[in-house]
Length: 149
Image (cartoon, rainbow, N blue to C red; front, side, top):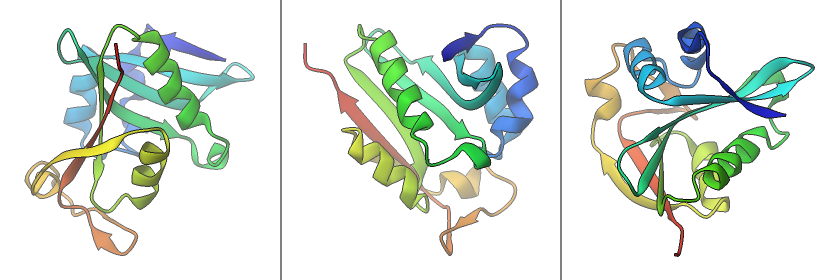
């Protein structure tokens, strides 16, 4: 079951750092955004944070599934849930590191297309170097999906 977490959102900040290791950024978008979770046996096991950037655009700020629950389509279900919840939006944005191959594959399978990048984002805003798939995360790549009206 998917539901919004309304109380004590900041309690999830350190957990969400597993997918975004900048605690300051995580705390900021938790404060300004909405946190949803997929619950199993009354325990949250997959999370998504979204923020409305304007009247037409919703940005997905963080998606995380706890490691032992990965591969079950929970992140996909959460993304589709918020897209359905925010039917009034025409554009959905989601960002990931240039080194996050799995994320890029998931997002493109869900109909997202490469939009733009912020060069050196992970160098400029993260104190520690981030490596995955044997490459350094340097650029923030944005993917977008447009809903036809």
